[in-house]
Image (cartoon, rainbow, N blue to C red; front, top):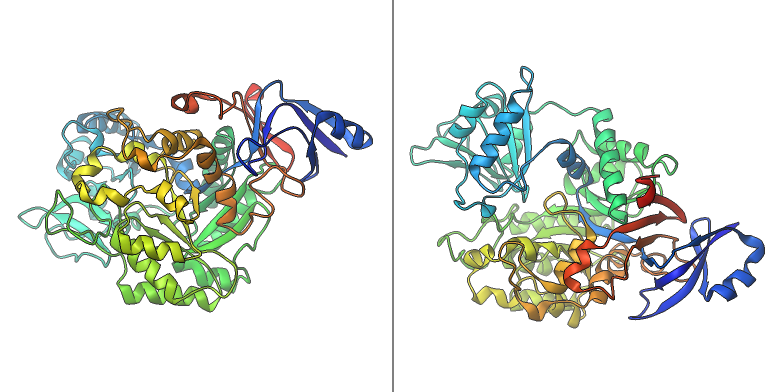
Length: 536
């Protein structure tokens, strides 16, 4: 027995402006699409529920192609610093939270961004010490490529404060002119502090996953490609938490879990591999970091930062090491998903992928790909790899990123339209909790490319149509995981995954896309979020 959906525009996303009247679903699948009259009479004896959309708009279910589900859940639980407008606001928030800390408890904050502040200075550990002298403090920058720590946290981490603890490979412990630590730790140096934090419990992991999933469903997301499996007690523990929460009964969400290269062998030893695992917690490509982020000037560029001469960022791994990581994945015929923001990082990764093609039809992805040069762009055109973009970066990075890069490098920066026009496949995600997880914000950013700081439009030649932007979160996110023949469209034989909006996204003013409410989220034919019922 099945369900007939009707009463509003239903965009199949097969081609632009293809709209049908009704959809009939049974169990997990779409059985047929067509007119209401045809489906009603054809499947009359099989219809046990008819759902009238009452003018609402149905789309294939949105999937976020790059986020961190556990970190997103933690951000919802922890002290959120992402909207703070000054260092003083951050310190005041710490003071207010510190009054409720128990002895030895860590004060953990998320999302500070000095580029939002009138004076973009990095907070020194002495300022943290004045507010919280006896409890350890760890504050993650919005990009999650840097943290701030107070003296108590540095002490617990066993770091010598005066130039005795060396920078780890791929990271920086910032020091002042007297070689004293400032409390600012970049990229892999963050792990020196994080390893001193208490180990999280299985119950905690399950709690934050559950909180995150509820929020994702409310945003119209039916699935997400997440990278979490190397940070919370290892592969078995974290994968087990996902499987326990996403049991297909109490909670339904299609998590596609990237596997950090440091736990790849754990996956293999468990007898698992690409696209293996339960229906709602399948495993994905091998995740590798090649560089840092633009905010902290650690993204790997081919020439100096315009506002920091002599600094080109840095590689997390040497080129031979990157090549070895890809080669190791290829031993098991696994695709890779490589974080690469700077143009030199993209170029090196594209070159390595060209050298080590996959023998299977699985697809590699380059995550972010924000800054390209001509050589990297030409290589990407020849690769069967997908660029995993985050459209809201253009809203949060401009105009400050112009100071980082200079005008000349903007020719191939955030170049989404150029990629699509040259046959480079793209998928769309948020990188939550770095950015807000709402896919409607991402779609709007891809279309209008307007800065959230000054309201100006940047690089308009790279703007996408609404159809192209919606494709990023539907057909694009399905294509990157080799599921374009079963997900991402509303057509016969595909998964019955739908995002139902209160308004027609193709008819509203593009500046108002983010104001559209999600009415329902449907996964495998089951309503898992209903705005009128809050949650199911």
